[in-house]
Length: 375
Image (tube, rainbow, N blue to C red; front, side, top):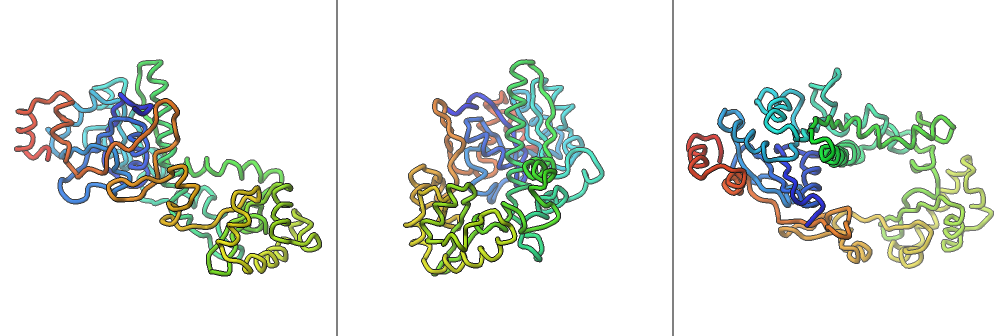
């Protein structure tokens, strides 16, 4: 049983960070119920839908709304993935839900937040990380910023922050017996992920106006990726002097060319020389020489190949669920381990079972289905 065994979470179906947050909570043992809007077809992607039960409710129908509110009475958390005000218009906003269950944690997941001039505007990860400085900082000098997939806004600043907020609120509810509303905004999360650079900039340790001129943005020859003779890539992160010394030793770098590690004026020349050295061997050859040492080295793998890397295999970093290789539950608990309960269920697959468990009689469920309030 995971650490959240006994908790019930209702997730209104959405995309991106809200399903990710629900997935993590389900992995931790929560009874995760996803409320879908239409039956049939693929209800969710085969990863974020894992471990979740699915019911289909028509929230444009008063009986469907009432059904959700009855579910809320037995829940601990509800995840709202919609723009501000949508749940209120449907009749399932915080006021209505907390009236039914004063201990409920109502977690709202948006891009711009519940308030402010952009609250009602559409947006995506690339926009949220743009106004927090994260996107500006990523890329090569003289070139345009490079979108880091949707890892910073959606996933790190959204899904992870959602889980963090839910867990904290549940801890507080356990003491006070009272629920509350959580305003989880991806723009806030992206800003928090930039915390270190805000601390470095005032002391002159980071230039916020430039790309590829700083310690961790690819400017340093000892902190970057390099092409190998086979066209594959490796990564180096030899920041500390003892790790840099080991890099020089294993790679055969001369003191004359690579002695002044932190002389930024020499970084471009040293990077060019180091690139030439890295091109002399294949990725596998560099792995044989450096992997597992304190050089701070790793091969650059695509996410499909990553599942076969010996370190990931040894740790069971990936699992196969429903025929799809995907990240295993994390973090790991010694006494109450997380687990994937089952593969993604189709939309509405669990409607009857969930509503029965919530206290509805089969006759009520049949009438709701006949009226089109559920599927």
